[in-house]
Image (tube, rainbow, N blue to C red; front, side, top):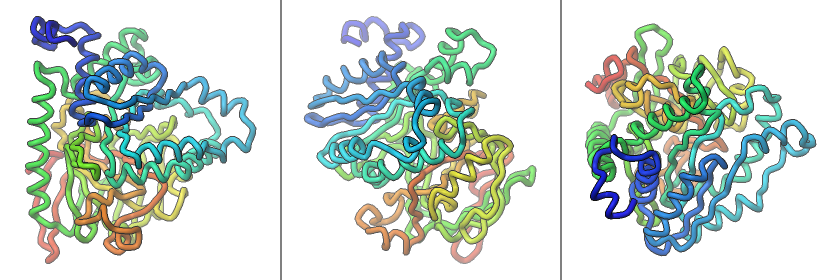
Length: 424
């Protein structure tokens, strides 16, 4: 948006769709990435996101980007692989491409991902082929993902409404109406449906930091999740020297960024061997094109020993069999039930949004930055403190208005943190 346009149009409700899209792009670059002059940007996006990609690219160059490179994905092309590809295809991933992306990150490039693929794209495909494909890609992308999980670079994720996704979120609506409704939900959840979204994000980040500082001051040794319906009774031990995080973060390259747009969570690293009890998902999980519904698992000594789901159970069990760390937790996050995303009543079928509607846990890889000095530690040192290691990192939601959460101190005393899904 030009300076003249900004002077004329001040209220979000007065903006055209193109101007609203421009605001999202501006927030992605200025708040999400904190892109600095002379920095490269590597972007990934579904082909339907081209209008948003163009806006983000413009704002990136205005911010001084050296070069913007975008990698596109296309759902029909993905399905063609499952229909016509040879069997060997499902154990293959383009390592050369992933190595190139990792090299870009190591040389200082920022990363931006645009979410928007059809959450149910692979629902009718062979779960074994889906699992093999995911494992192959996880192995190939590990060097790049390690730089992201260690927050070595500035990165962010934003969303773009696409027809297939919109029809899943708003079934029964005409396609154009569903897409328009999804865009409206994205704009509100991403906190740009205000007169000054950049200022709003700075204030929101400050509020999250205040909550994070309070949690870090407590030094709890564990959290206890207990739902009124009896579906969840879970004790999550926290890693030694754990750190809570939330909102923006300063990456290893010194750039302050906001990794997820939207974000409502305060999160930290669980101890991989100190999780016990039962837990049931409060929302469905969309994972790599497969919908997994009503997940219920039992942990013993940090490890899932029993897992069921009413839909996608085969995919779930293959997921947690990816490697030794896939059955253990790498993240635990607290999100109030009054989160704007939860209060919208919209089930997005997309983890970027749904994880910010409810407290959640993540299977797999831990964030080393959620440990004191963790970004400088090797794998053995991180493991000694309880941080999990895995090829996967998959968040799923467990919080609701029925959930109570207590903090447990080292001496066993407890303190109420959440009641009925809200901060005490």
